[in-house]
Structures are given as structure tokens and as C-alpha cells.
Length: 225
Image (cartoon, rainbow, N blue to C red; front, side, top):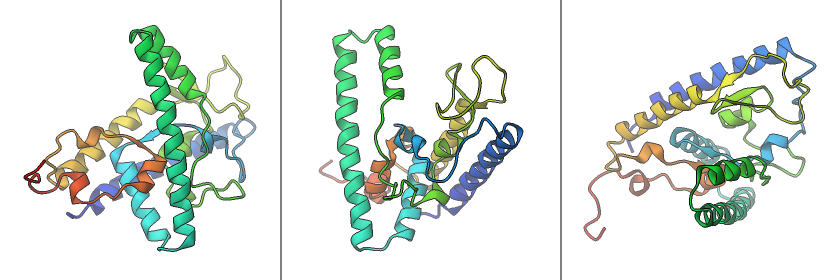
């Protein structure tokens, strides 16, 4: 596989920037940001990862856990989590289809999805992340106010007051940069899948996926494809 270190290094710089933003807001409002060791509220939220984040997390997982009982247990949890997410998404799809695909129905489903709670497979028995150092950006920003689609969101366990002005993170801008990095992967591997960078997966699937030449579309397509 082509060298992807430059893309991952650029991703790590973005991570460092988001960590700095979180630290700055936390220092400005220490009574509002209540994140602490053992709190796993954000570890039950449902969200998907861009290609660059999924591949980065997969790489660090492979490096951190050799073949053995612990690795197998994590992958078993990931498979169980992915089955739950698949059923959840299937139910949402049916709801949207039955509602005729209306914008109102879509907004209602997105609101329902934002409240869904499924345990992350990377949580250990004490509700601590076993890949905390390499956790996705969504996890890193969860405890401070953010704006998605013009709406402000914040963890329900924080003490930020509704209606009061606070610094907010523009999630779409971060997502744009992640998308650019994902395109960088597509271009670096010369993928025949031109939309490879648009594939988003949950943490569970990021752990389970084998990001090999076949998945990334490297080389000519199989003759029987």
C-alpha cells in the first residue's frame, strides 16, 4: 500500500488543534465543562467516522492489540455493536420510507438518532476508553458547545446555560478538513473508487474493516467484478 504517513500526520495536527480548542474553552468555563475520567456519556453516542479517521483508528488498534484474547474480545464487542447499529439504521430507513421521504420526517429521524444510545466497543469494564489517546475528534469535542447545521449542541452533563453566549465549535468546518484528508488518501492510493472519501462508518466498523487493496480500490478491478 502507498505511504499514508503524511496524511495521518496532517490528521494529527488537526487533532492537536481541536484539543487546544477544548482546553481553551475548558479553562474559560471550568465550572461548565464537567468531563472527567470514568464519565462515558459521549461513548454511548452514535456517529460515523470519515475515511481518514476510520483508517487512523484502525491502524492504532492494530498496533496496540496483537492477536489474542483481548483483541478478540474487542472485535466481538465491535461486531455486536455493529449489528445493533445496522438494525437501528434499518428502522430509521423504514420510518423515512413509510413517511414518503419528507423533510419533516427526515428531521424527526435525525433528532431521534441524536438521542440513540449504544455503547462504544472501545469501552473497558470501568467505562474507560482503551484507545483514548487515539479517540476520534467527535469524542474530543463532545463536552463543549458545538454548532451543526446551524443548531447548537452540548453534552447534557455539562453546566452551560441555555441562551447564554459561549464559544462554539463549527463542526462543519472540521468535517470539511477531514473530507480533504480523506480525499488525500483516495489520491495517494490512486483508488479506482472516485467516491471512496465519502464513505463514513461507525467506530465498530472501523475496527472490523480490513483496509486492504481490495477495500481501497487499488489496482485494476477484478475481471469477474
